[in-house]
Structure formats: structure tokens, C-alpha cells
Image 1 (tube, rainbow, N blue to C red):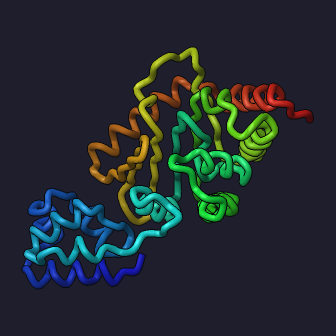
Image 2: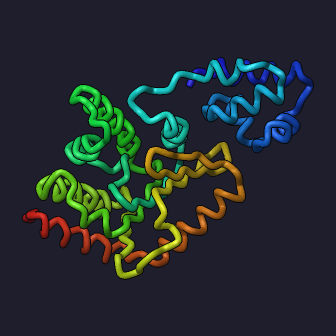
Length: 264
């Protein structure tokens, strides 16, 4: 995101004689959110931009000139994608599909080919490339620290066919065995769990407060309210405590890959 937008917001706030906290109070936002927007680290939602316009008396300028989003990513995920690239630690819970940054190319193609209305091959391929670029943050051997809790359903639902599933699962096994990613499985036997309402991503940073992102069908939300983030962190911790330990989880992944036809 270009910081021109954030710099303009800061200039308008200063012209109005407001501190970040005073603007946050008036716009019903958090001070940290204002700080991240001004620094160019976050893209405000359309509703946030409308509240900022009302608080600053700038008409509809801030809501009309939001930074253009990457057309290959759902608008509601764009701000979370940018933060994901800056995070020093990421913890994800997945209930339907393997988390995006852990997906293989063929698995990503299968997932992104299931949208409705259907995408054309060219558009789907653009989305796949974008998803694989996200995964490049794992090329660094240390940062970010990545943990994933997978509902067992993720392993049992055949996405793209047995061969694709076996390849995808073994990709996660290799990442887990080399210590790059910790993968834990939340067994079906646990039953309904407080975290089982949708996808959750928790992110920590060196120079800003932690954030969280939750997603359901065609809707996603970035959270930076300390109370909300803390609650989501607690729910994740509960899921992690109910999940299988790393060694047992990797054993379940290897068994699932074998069920899909993988042979060592």
C-alpha cells in the first residue's frame, strides 16, 4: 500500500488539531488502528474510511480514494495479507481447507477452482500465483514462526483427488519434520469446539500490536481491538491444548497421506 493515503490522513488530522486518540474516539476506532493506517501498514475498511471522513469533516474523500486493492485477492483479505508479510509469528486454525500459505500449487488450483460463479482458467491461475507468492514467507528458515491447527476434516475432505491430497499432506509433513512449521490436528472426536466457527489467523509483530483475522463464507474481518485479539488468542490456545501433540499429528498426517495412496 502506498503511504500517500496514510500521510494525507495524518495531515488532515493535524489540521483538525486532533491527536490519534482523539480521532480514534471520534471515529469509534482504536488509536493503534489509526497509527497503522497513517504509517501505511493497514488499509482501512470502507466503513472505517466513512467514519474517518465524518470525524474529520472531509466529505467522502477518504472513503472514495481508498488504495486500490490487488484484484487477485478478495478485498476483505487484502489488509490481512499485507500484515501477514510483516508478521514475526503466525498461528492459524483451518476448518475447511489447508491454510493458504501451506498450500501446494495443485491443491491451490483445486481450491480456487471451486468458486461460484466459476472463475475462468486465466483468472484462477492469477489467484494461484498470488497464493504461492504468499507462501514465499516460509522460504526464510526462521521467520515467521508458523503454527497451524488443522481440524481433522481438512485431512478427510478430498480436494482435487487422492494424488493431490497425498502431495499436499506430505508437504505439511516435511515442513513439520524439519521444524519449519508446527502442525497440530484437532481430532474429530473432540466434537464441537469454540474455535470451530471459521478460519482464524493470529499475527504478532516486532513493531506493532498483535492482530487477528477471521473468515467465513465471502466475509472476512481484520481485528486489532486488544480485547478481541486477546479473546481469539485464548480460543486458539484452547484449541491447541485439545489438539494432538506434534509427533502424533505428523503420524496422523502420514497415515492420511497413505490412505490417499502415498508410498514412502
